[in-house]
Image (tube, rainbow, N blue to C red; front, side, top):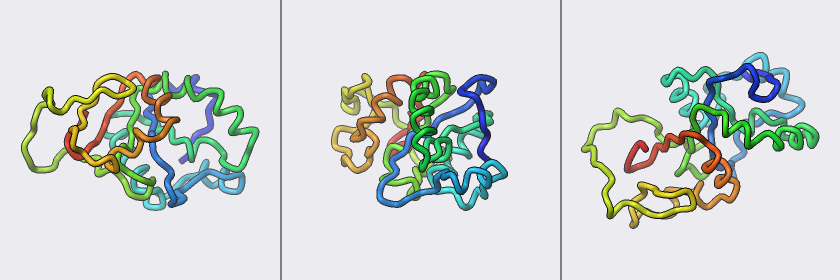
Amino acid sequence: RLVLTKGTEGIRTYATLSHCWGDAKGLTTMKSTLDQHIKGIVFQDLPKSFQEAITVSRSLGLPYLWIDSLCIIQDSNSDWERESQHMQDIYAHATLNIPADAATDSTIGEDMTVNKPGDVHAARGGCLVLDTHGLSHIPRDSPAEEHVLRRRAWVLQERTISRRILHFCKYELA
């Protein structure tokens, strides 16, 4: 369910989700849906990226997850103006940011699980790539589509302000 707060005051442990809206219009909060979202949102009605981020947040003991498309009333200019002024605080005070790096829209999901069979490999020199935030563990020959968030300008703020980022990538959990 959507929980109304006054900024980040009173809520000390929460995660944020960075995601690409893409062409598929995922679930959003509108003036007409605000009251219903406060009462509750059926988990199965959420886009796959949201479901996975909620599952990860809960498994880490984080009771709240901030998602822009749900936490900002999308058809309210006044709410968007007010909330956008607090974005830096939202990301800076979050315990963790969960980016859906490869998902081209919120319906695709990220397969945010770590119990897949296979070998575990440590990232070494051949896999490190300099990006706008420092070092990344994305293999050099990795297709660009896998990391769609890296092509989004607004993600730079989310990446640089967040204290911790948990990436669920094809090649690693970083």
